[in-house]
Length: 222
Image (tube, rainbow, N blue to C red):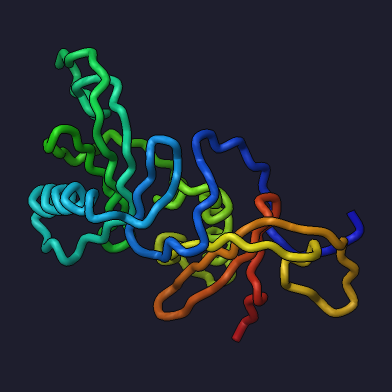
């Protein structure tokens, strides 16, 4: 390629069952369907989110107001353990419709599994170091890379950098809307996302075409 851009590159694995998040879903709590569609959380799922928040608040003995809802994901659990089997316990081997609710307390992720109105905090839920609930979205992996890059640039721990959302976007060159003087770029239609990150009260944007991701505008020392 005959263009140059200072960016973080990453190989992207196929994210099965995911689809592009609509540009107008906002940055609040979201629902992820069985098909991977991402939607603004509807009133139908609010009671499920409320149950999860109440369950976590009681277990951690913290105020409900300190808990943020990130996603309510519709899931068909493989058995009656609803994704949190305990050693030595036998569970009904039947598909159990339910939900996985991702919550956040002071930047830390917590997971509540639900089925048939029964909810439990699942400490067995697996998540990679630094992973955010946004991995449920198609731009999730790039958001993780952007988050790590921003933490390095700001000289802070990754847990202090939050990904607040993303919007689909298209650009007419490989610059992805971030042209630099004197740099030659390839023309064409480049589909991708604008990612929104936050550290403290400051907001940052990253652009990605799902192969590259970089801060736009560039982050300077001041």
